[in-house]
Amino acid sequence: MVLDPLAAAKFVCETRGWSITSLSLQKILYFSHLAFLGENKGKPLFDENFEAWDFGPVLRNVYTYTKNRGVNINIIEESVFCDIESVEENNNNKEIQTLAFFTKHLTGLHPSTLVGWSHWDGGAWKKNYSKFYKSTIPDEDIRNEYSGGEKLKKTLLDSRK
Image 1 (tube, rainbow, N blue to C red):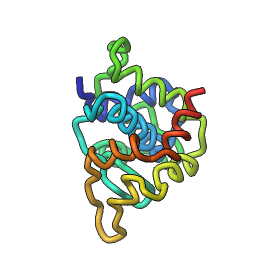
Image 2 (cartoon, one colour):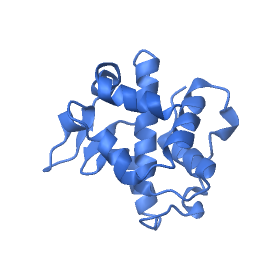
Image 3 (cartoon, rainbow, N blue to C red):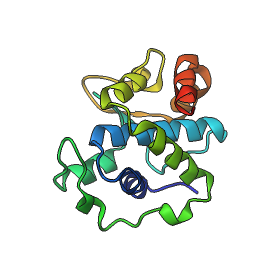
Image 4 (cartoon, helix red, strand yellow):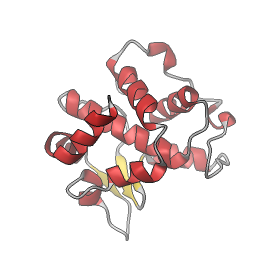
């Protein structure tokens, strides 16, 4: 089952208690997607591609949706996703388990730490980023980041402990 990014974003915010920045939300979604691709033979977690923006990988629809609804820069308001159905009731499948795991383990980290992890040399963001335009990050590049990026893999695996 591929997840709707907005429903996944609502799940992350509900799970975290709404005290999360937009930047952290985007990185949690990205690392969840990265791990899911890597652990499930390239099967995507979301039905939208990430784009390489200045502060890392971004799901444009999540950014646009939250931006247009008055999200404070330091916290997402509960009312932002009020018209989105949550995915929480499906918590027995691999997709939701992956999202829940990364929500639990990454929400306590400072957003700049998550940005640093997404910007590592040799990673998918670095390979696709241009300061002149926002390019799509192909899932194949993200999957290769998981399988080939020993530094990132170690960091992600260490966060699981």
